[in-house]
Length: 357
Image 1 (cartoon, rainbow, N blue to C red):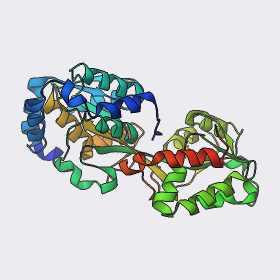
Image 2: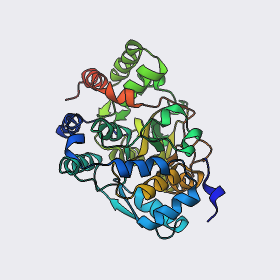
Image 3: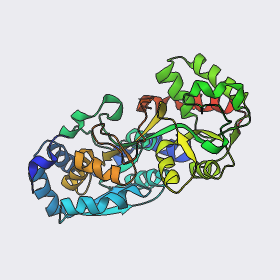
Image 4: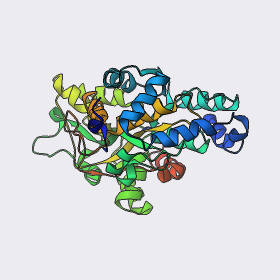
């Protein structure tokens, strides 16, 4: 094992009963769980030890249980297990909301069955509000900007909401819109589609571009005058765009477009700007496999782990590791935990501006 090899290196918020339960539990969860002090002390120590020593401890545990939905954990698992023979990944796969509900229920029953939490930022915030996550400060985090880490999480990858278009439907002589301001041009009337739940566009512009709610809302109202059509699901938006049923999508994910282009779809997309939605990793308080949990999180944050994310079609959080396709935007208005806490007013305003139920 080469120790030096590993040294320093959006989903929308849903105000569901799950969130409410998690927040309510923040005041009682500690009293209902078993004493996690020994496990947490091991985890804290594991955050600063050498990767060689950490791997040796993780091998004695043999397993790391990762709560994380979607396709990414199965894709990176073989790479991790090859790098660290003897440490097996057990993935608990479900939607982020379902996993939050499961973790909260287990905590209420005095159990901690997960080791690593992997999810979009809003679910990380929910889990932290429920006091289910351990403070996290690992050496690999020094290479990450402040908006891609916190005192309990570290970003694994980013998704960017940006503008995409069908090249065959752009009027001759016109350039496709590459900034959000250009979408307000009347020439795009009747040609715009979006996901109805992507209020993060409004919030990202208000908080991080304009630093003005009024300016961002004014732009959204002018875009609304262009008769935006809404369709639920980013995959559906992708297919509508690729199939020529829509001309311009302004809440599409940048990393969704290159695979469709490679299949022959006449698409283009803007890398000028986008609203960044981080996915991230954290460690359960009271993890049953504390060394393996920290090993997994530190590996994800390393250049080797970030390369595994890139090769799985994701946009690595670490800026020195490039995605396999050019999908990282030049200017990102990246959402933060503070934005998640203040999201409801932007969601309500978005729904009002675009007359969404």
